Image (cartoon, rainbow, N blue to C red; front, top):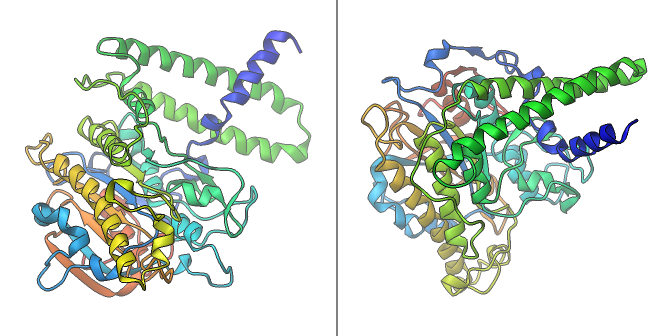
Length: 452
């Protein structure tokens, strides 16, 4: 092997993560859950033809139950007070559960299970090794159906740490706890935690006119790397033993899917021009950090760069302190000491803090005009919540769930919807149907959420 070839292979090993993460060919449209695709022109659009957007935000450690759910005729409780001016744009849904996040025979590890189950409705295999297995997430089902409509099939963001190796929670792999999106049962889609890198990915590096030039250069580089991978793969495949070919074929399936994605991206050559400067990086203040990630999501939706996104606000089990609220104890610690009134109030204050950043994002979405004259929020479906209800007891029924947006006037808002106990996956079936994915099953669903 010559030196140049060795260097190139070393470079490719460094690129391995980005190569390994596209959707698998086995999950092509129409092959999962027996779903049938509606006409492409109607996918991910509202009745007016405007883009329909879908996003999911995850909060950690459940909520302080006494301060969360609305009372009376949709009277917002303390935790949701920052949303008061936006009541007409969202609904609170009570009665949804995630049975697969419960202990069952697996014992401890509720935080990892909850995070893995939240968008998949599936039970995570208890392992701290490489044999992780849970299920495809709702966002990735949608992305594999309608992702070709935009430059990016989906956008995965985090305002917290990223850990994908080793064990983190009572025998569960860290990958379960730090990822919301799963493109297959064994493939998490790692989120980006640096707002600067998100911005440069969406709009190019540099300032002003430099962005278009740098974006085109990056596309050329990606194409060169991919061409080399396929060339090398063809050479390697000829020398493999029969017993190794199946594994190698699986690898090639991933690479070829990446090629298809790259070709699709190349059809969207024009990147939008925006006036905002590139963020400098991760700010030290947590509220500013979350705001920046919400801003990146808002910009991506506003420019129709993607219509599908996830945002992990903090990993489940987070013991972050909140000195800006005068709270020195860790969040996770506090949730297990809610029998003390003063500590319970601190949990409620943290819940309200997270809601306040969400409210800021919704306000921006509500005041940004979309192509049809309605707002971005009007043409969206945005889920905010988690798969732990009571953080003290680690319960997974009657989950804290907010559904914001009107899906282009297709769903009702301004209410506290109490449904009979049922899987949260029922909501996801209804959301997929509204998005244009015709399926009657997702995760552990039992039916559509008729009240949706």
